[in-house]
Image (cartoon, rainbow, N blue to C red; front, side, top):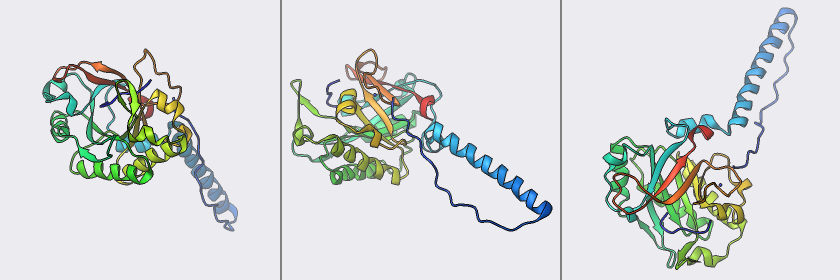
Length: 280
């Protein structure tokens, strides 16, 4: 994205739905037999529902919150003010989706600012019927700051039809090829990093949007406890190799930072694959 870092299959944890035990009732004859049959049918239906939820990773919820793209593997771009003015009519003929940067936290002073092209990009994409998601370039070093970043994003996207995930972009800033910035210098551990992204995602979820995390394969492998990130969080991995080197679950792969797309005026644009049928 704005600043690239070093060079995602996600956990497939199962869960059991908690249900209250059925109350016993005294029945006789045919009434008792009918009750038993009804109970068996009901339990069978419940079992099927629970099984579907377990093996789909909560797909029913995702279908309610996320626009189902028409392709099994959709192609799209993610953009920010760095990409300049964009001709969304041209983009709509090429891209299946777009992620728009809404804002950033500065990696030196830590101030939050609005991406100057965010509003125009969101409006332009929606006008030309391109499914839109958004992201925020984070430098949060604790849960409170992550929550503030989420609140900032949620305030800026009010009134817009954001149908794809609202994402925290978690990465170390770089300068002259070396990692730098407040997040890098904080030297946080896996637990703290995971708490930060979960704090952002919790705010997004409670507001009714689909949460997501963007990071490099390197971050996911060495700086996150992926088993502690909820299953409903979409995983977006940046990896510019021939294949993703992170061996966990992921939904979106940013495979290049030097892509091309008609309508984008900058020399390069980030390009992504969205594996829609995999999770929806």
